[in-house]
Amino acid sequence: MKSKQRLLSAINRETPDRLPVTTHHVMPYFLKTYMGGISVQEFFDYFQLDPINWVDAYIQDTCSDDWRIEEENIPDSTYKTTRYKIMTPVKTLSMTLQGNEQTDWVTEPLIKEKSDIEVFAKYAPVPLCDVAEVNRQAEEFDERGLIRGTIPGFDIYGQPGCWQDATVLFGIENLIMETFSDPEWVHTFLKIFRDRKKKYVQSMKGAKFDILELGGGSASTTVISPAIFDRFVAPYDAELIELAHQAGQRIVYHTCGGMMPILESIADMNPDAMETFTPQSMGGDIDLKDAKRRIGDRVCMIGGFDQFHYLKDCHPDETRKAVRKCFEEAGERGGYILAPSDHFFDADIECLIAFADEARSCIYQ
Image (cartoon, rainbow, N blue to C red; front, side, top):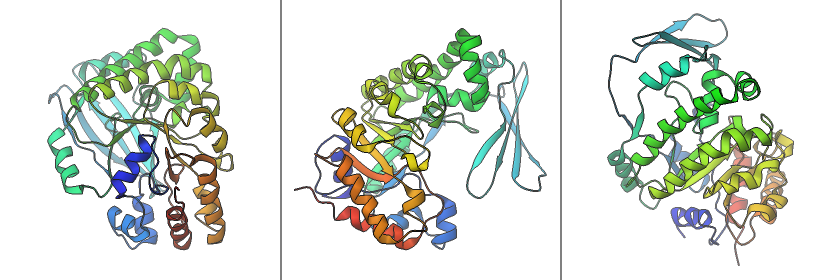
């Protein structure tokens, strides 16, 4: 099989020729620090992994002076700090990000007063899918591997899922507290995100994506309870998944963190695949064999590999054993794609070679 066929076979819960093996986002920090600045696709070629081409191609449904963004670089001795001021006809909103070579994070959320969501709902532009650009890149990539996208989060900094995007703009602790003190306001906030994302999902019809990401780590059970997930996460994202299917698209639901108490709840949302199946050794809670037993006949499983302990500072033979263990626990009858549980920043080249090589030797009979 070619890589695209192999990966799609697993996503469709079929049995490919061998275990598909890939990774999540290939981080620029890793490419620069360890690989001499090669491109993402050169990375896939070097390690002979099954390639993924992430395509982010958006257009705005409106272009208006009612939502104008100004950036201000704030001096900081440790981190790059950028404050965004958003001018609207009724109020100026602001949001601050910090970052280093590896990643960025929010230090000042956009929504500070509950009424701010009304400003956001009225004036924030909505991204739509640039179908022509997606298809151009899909045609260029051909059978090389998957064309993967994401349901866009807030354009300055966000996450694909409704709850997850809301946590970025309001703060995770604040939003959790409001589920108890003012749940109706939380539902109103989530409906704003749902309605924005619905427009994007409906605009994807005809786009030649192979799979798109929804979800995010803020809905894992290392962050929120299963009760909050069932009440405030699943209803909104399940609706988006159904709309995506109507538009001819597949969805992978991303949960980096705890998953075991909500495995069936996620599967009940009817995604085509689930990730990242973070092991207990990395702060998650996954028992990969039990997860396969419980939901492996309903969705494709992606991830499950401990990149922290077995892609760095270990002997390549240990990496190989960890790969084989994942295959034995989740690979039966296909429907499984081996990948690190989310992205990585640091790795030993020898271990990455062993990771890919051992996976390629995991053959289906």
